[in-house]
Length: 423
Ligand code: ADP
Ligand code: ASP
Ligand code: MG
Image (cartoon, rainbow, N blue to C red; front, top):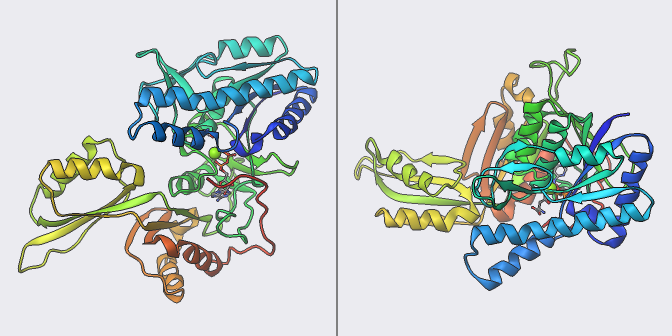
């Protein structure tokens, strides 16, 4: 007998029928003799609908109240799921994040977990019950307020519970069969990946593959939690995200021949800001990015052009989440930067693979594939195991399709997307 944490995403609990289907699945795990803790997301697109509602009431909802509103979504699904399980003759109890001991800092909308004290969950398990925990939410001891972990954060709730309860495995149930070489909604011929290292998954998640919340992957890596990403619509084995014992070794310490490319991710959630006509002298970049940092925005890529000799002026461009762009533009204007350009029609494509370390020529091959598809590259950035390029947003689908084919990643058959709107 083991302890299993199971997380069900919004598309897996979108309506009453789906909730009953998921309840059956949880009961089967319990019947097999395991202790079961479940982290559940809000039903379907509930979180987006609540956000839309808030923005219809006010342009700038107060962060504390927004968290109060959004956490209601997970309260609905947790209670319904517990009811469904009880109606099947098994004891189940639902808990809010706060009741489950998810202690966070006070940063509304992006709270970080500082402690997990799952006393009530342990008690419920000891009494033979199934514990259902509302995902994505916590409680700040400092402010005594309810917080949320950021969009997609239920994955992180599940991993944090798995670590705190020393679970045998953390299963992430979703609307696709696991992790693929690209988003199957974008690239139907995306290929299923049976096993992926946490290092590669981190880069894919950071590059926009929202199948896993990046902080869930980080947390799992740090606490040695094995993740199993699989479909809630069938019983197929999904993808194992594992932490190899060392570079080039698998979990058992055996050498592995890694494929050069693990996958291609896309991100349509970023915008580009250009500060035009900056004097090319020491301290200018520091000034701009101190102002930007003051807003709390996460900057992704930065490009500075060579200055024109005649004017001594240069342009500095950077990318950031679309949702932070207005705040950053306002902050820069307030500091006297008046010549600003804002472009929210960009898309980012990233090629990720640990095998890139030892393979020269991957960038050349990537740029060639994009050139052959007639796609212009506007910005480039690299890490040890990733190359990212910025293109026009409307060419991103053509770009990812071309690159996926060029690197030999296409599968024989099309991947299945079982549910969800991809919102
Ligand atoms: P959930 O509601 O279960 O949390 P998400 O919508 O957050 O589900 O994540 C699942 C979705 O992630 C899939 O439907 C798919 O469109 C998307 N996705 C993006 N990149 C990948 C990838 N590399 N492999 C699998 N799915 C991906
Ligand atoms: N319901 C939240 C969201 O839509 C959390 C989650 O689903 O992981 O972002
Ligand atoms: Mg998700």
